[in-house]
Amino acid sequence: MSDETLPAPDATTAGAAPPLPPLRLKRHEERRLAAGHLWVFSNEVDTGATPLTAFAPGDLCAVLSDRDRFLGYAYVNPHSLIAARILSRDAGFRPGPSLLVHRLRVALALRERLYEAPCYRLVHGESDLLPGLVVDRYDDVLVVQIATAGMEAQREGIVAALDKVVRPRAIVFKNDGGARELEGLAKYVAAAKGDLPERLVVREAGLEFHVPFEGAQKTGWFYDQAANRRQFLPMLRGAGRVLDVFSYAGGWAVPAARAGAQVTCVDASAAALEAAAANASANGVAVQTLRGDAFTVLEQLHAAREKFDAVIVDPPAFIKRRKDAGKGEAAYRRLNQLAMQLLPRDGLLVSCSCSYHLEPDALLDGLQKAGRHLGRFVQVIASGGQSPDHPVHPAIPESRYLKAFLCRVTED
Image (cartoon, rainbow, N blue to C red; front, side, top):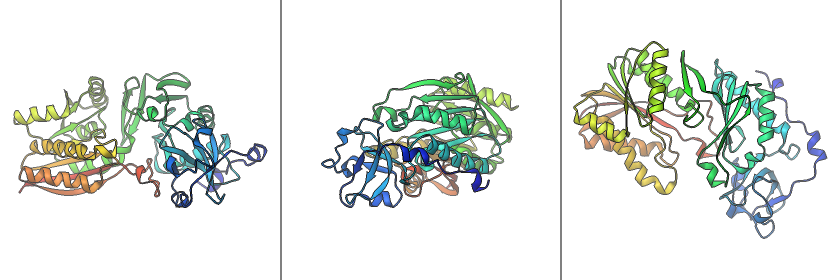
């Protein structure tokens, strides 16, 4: 797609608008922003010159250095540790409808270059220069999640821009995530265009999945794992029995079953297991389901002397805050150790973590220690991260969060 399809925002409205109030930083605090980061922390603000209390959550501002150098336009939340997030670095293009349309067109151009089917993450927050905004596309349905007061204040503009750029049948806000509480925002689920869908349709790797919208996790599907599924699953060829732990709606399980494996899904959610079984059936295969706490089920399977040629563990984030890293690392190690106990003398383990605060080397260290505890040898065959529709912002380490390893586990 040529650059001509990505017009810059219209500057005419910016010139007619009154100037935005300044948010001045302390001396030398602009260095991280100048390097490309988008966040302004509350302790970086010169509150003597520009008190944060002068702003309401969601207000727009012009971020300035202590020497009045323009650093960017941002939105503010005076009650949050991250006091401001940059939306634009061009003094001629302040935040508004035309900037939202421009950002969405740029984001859409990337996804259309990468994907044939319109099933992907359309907007990945900071990595698409729209901090606090996530948009997942399910063909002609867009599921939107807003995590910040600044984006909530632009909700109507977001809907109008999505309608203009994508022209979907439905735009749905699924604003029920825990991050909203940190911003002082209420949780809600509502349709901004069309009706709330009964189910979401996903097409991935030649298969079709249906996910009930009510009770769906996140926006409904874990698009971030698509690349890992595409890379790892062919390597499970020949695995007669596969155990998919935290299976959700069958993203790992169904293609494994289609490849000929006998698959068992484990999840605490009855609705998720029902969706996994239905998706398997719709794609011409069957899966067995086990409902329960993953750790308990793995212990029960080990006590029953069950063995699987491959085990997939794709848990939710065990570490949501840095201070929880110790307990979280222990949980990842225990989970993988329980999984290894179910492998025969020569088996495969897919181990994933979506915890940003768990470094890849820390997950590898946990895998190694789990193996040593059992007297097993762990070989890493392949590694992966989040899919390309979840791009990484090089200046923001938090945007790179997903780790995945395919391991061969043998006798020592």
